Image (cartoon, rainbow over all chains, first blue to last red; front, side, top):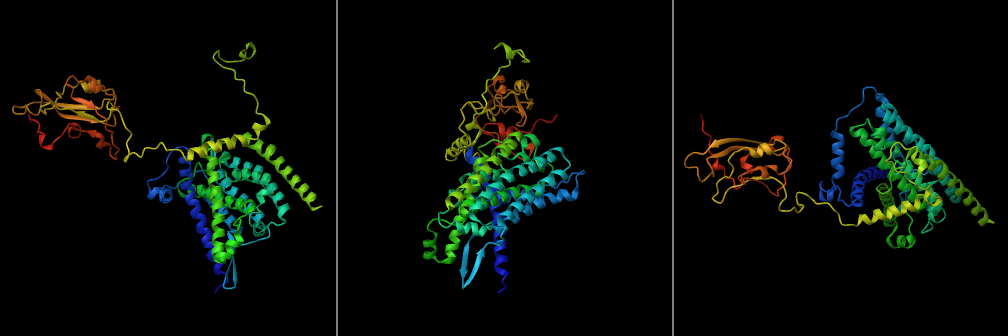
Length: 342
Length: 178
């Protein structure tokens, strides 16, 4: 058997899974929005509206494709592509489940495990904002440019606090590899118990990074029409919206892996001993997936609760609130580590 | 009270005394959590949606829906094509053509003049019920039926076939050719 085959299969599975989750996130978003507003939401396409994402997709593809005359055509097409590719690339380093042993061979449910795993996620996610910036600039439209500008300044302001929150975490784990971090959180030994403040900062900045309400200023309809995607139509718009949902999925996965133990759950060893390694791995994956889904629900829940921040409030919160707080978190973590080691 | 009003542009302006946010309020999180508990309770609440084609909202008997051209107790049409409904109509949705009753049609038309063509454009109609009020013969009424949706504008011009109470196709008599 070709040694690359399991990796290729896993890659296709993860790709399909990411797409499926993003597809149904759009449906779940509409359903959650409706239920939180005492409505029923889309329920006509298929039983319970289950085919709604397909109908939406067909509609998107059938729409007329417009490229503004005065736009930069190449960059205009490139923008959504970058947003989509970067969103998909981040899933590579996430450990989706525990190792599986079949016939004396060990398979990792992770496509790659570089030593710099977390940094890779950060790098890819922050390249993703180039998609928004390039698309917004190439549209040659004031509103798009404003949206792109807001996106970039928001990412700069919030990525700093996010990185500092991660530094505090890395000080405890002593590793940047996602695999190591998840494996350290055996059973119920999750990082959230040691880094509650760090998690809070990470959570808030994750909302800003994924451009979700209350930090969805780049696409603020009331001020900027559609923000950076004002000029986009058809599937190029679909790519931007889709990339947002994939980002939401990935950041949920990262949060669940870094702070909520990934695939670990209390009593994992005894379950594994009872059902065998393959089923144990699958249950681990299911637990991880459940955590991700809960985070995605939380993203949606917050979106339909909290109103959008004003631009100056956003900057104030980022620089005057979260940045000192994350520095304080690093200081506290370092002090506690030194004190406990003595 | 005197000093701030000096700078106001109008006498009706009201000066609000809004205190600055306290330190705890600036944390946002307590307020966000309070909001989240409110919205999560709505998740389980009974939904207000009425699933229209299957379910219908109950309406009062006096509800002004689609029009009906009434007949009298002998089954003859009450409308005499006087045109008062069309005159009263603020949306100019009603058009009609009058014809004279021929001998032997007494069981069909109550009086010697009747409307051979009577059309209401349901897209123009605002369902105000003025036609009802204007009619001296109690021939037209708005009844609690919803106007349906459609894809063709021409389908919304309702003729006698869809307005007349208990309409039967064989009752249509070709108009007199002159």
